[in-house]
Picture (cartoon, rainbow, N blue to C red):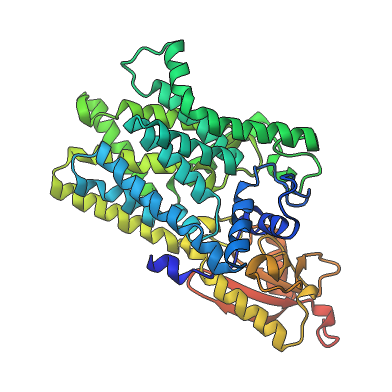
Amino acid sequence: MLLLWYFKEAPFFWDTVQLASKQAHFFFENGFGTFILPPFIDSGHPPGFGALLAIAWMLFGKSLLISHVLLWPFVLANLTLAYQLGKLYLEDSFRAVFFPLLLLIDPVLAGQSILVSPDILVVFGFLLTWYGIKKENLILQTIGVVFLGAFSMRGMMVGAAMYVYAVFAQWEQKVTIGLAFKKILPFLPGGLIGLSFLIYHYKMTGWIGYHTDSPWAGSFEGQDFSRIPRNGVILMWRLMDYGRFFLLFFLTGLITWFVIKHKPGKLAFRSDLLTLLISLSFFLLPSFLLYQSLTGHRYILPLLIVLSLAFLVYLEVFNFKKFLIVAGLATLVLCSGNWWVYPSTIAQGWDATLGHTPYYRLRAEAIDYLNNEKISPNEVGTVFPAIGPFEWYDLNSKSEGFQAFDPDSSKYVFYSNIMNDFPDETIVKFKEEWVELKHLSSPTVEVYIFKKPEIWNGEN
C-alpha cells in the first residue's frame, strides 16, 4: 500500500499511454457510441480497459489519482489470490505467504502494479480462473474468464489456455467429449465477449490483430525460421531477467535432483502445474517466438507466475529452516532486479521493473528546464515512450508535447536511457556532436536535453 500510495499520481508510462490514456480519452470525449477506436490508437485489443477508465473519470473526475486508485483493488486481489493458491499447493499457510511475496517483489509484476496497466486485470482474471478451477467454483471461473476476454487479445489466449488446463488438469482422469463440454460452461460468457468483439472489429475494419498501415505493424513483422532461435534466446533472457535467474537455476537443479533420485510422490512436479505450464506455453509462446517485437516481459507474466509457485513447491524438499533461507534469498535477489540497468545500446523492458520510477521526476525536471529557458516542447524531438501531448501522460490539459524525432528538423532532443528506439549510432552522435544543455541522473535512469550544434549561437 505504501508503494501504491507513493506512485499514486505517476504519469502514464510505456504502453499504458496507448492502452489506457489515449483510449480512455477517446471514450471520455466521444462517449460510447462505438467500440471501434481511431486507427492511430487501435491496436486490435478490446478497448474494455479504456472504457472502464473513462467511466471512472466521468464519475470521479479525470485525474492520475483516480486512474491509479481504479486498479488498487485488483493489485491487492492478485496478492490475496496468490496466497490462497499457495495454500492449495504448499504444506502450510506460512510457506504459502512466500508466493504472494515473490510476486510482490518480482520486478515484472511490481513494475506493472504501479502503472495504470490493463495487464493487472489480465493477471487478476488468470489467478481468479486458476483458483476457481482448483476449487471447482464455476462462478469464480466465469468472472475470471470475463476479465480475460474483455481487456486484451493476450487475455483471450490465456483464457483458451485455462480451458485446456481445466480439461487436462487431472492426468488420472480420462478426458472425454462429455468432460470437455462440462468444463467449457464457465468459459462461454468470457469467450463470447472476446469472440464477439473480434467479429465486430473485423466487420467494421477488415482486420484482426494488426494491419499493414498500423503504427504497430513492425511489431508483428514475421520472423523467418532462421531467426526464431534469436527470439528463443530472448525468451530465456526474459525468464531469467531481473534476478529471476536464481529461481530458474534453483528450480532446474531441484528437478534434476528429483529425476536422478527417482523421487515421485507429492514433491515431484505437480501434474496440474506441468499441464498449466504446457498449456500457457502453447498459447503464449508462438507469438513471442514468431514475431519481431512481441518479446516484452509482460507478455509472459502468467508463465512467470506459475514458475514462481513451482519454485516454492520444489523447495518443500527442504525442512522449514532451509526453506526459509532459500526463499528469503530468492526474495532478496528478485528485489535486486529493480536496480539492474543494461548499457544504453541494449533494449531493456523498463515497464517491467521499478527501476524506471526515477524517470517521472527527471522528466518533470527536464520539462521545467525547457519552460525556464523558453524552449517550446513542440521544438523537441524524442521517441517512444515520450511522444505526444503532455495531456496524454499527465492529464494536465496541455496540448503541447514532444514531437517524433527527425534528424533533419528536430532542433532539440529529449533523450533518456529508458528509450529503446534511438539507434545506437544516433545516441553516440548526441553525446559526441550535439550540445548537452541539461543532464539529470539517478542510480538507474538518466535524462538529457540536447541541442543541434549548428544552431548553438552559430557555433558548430
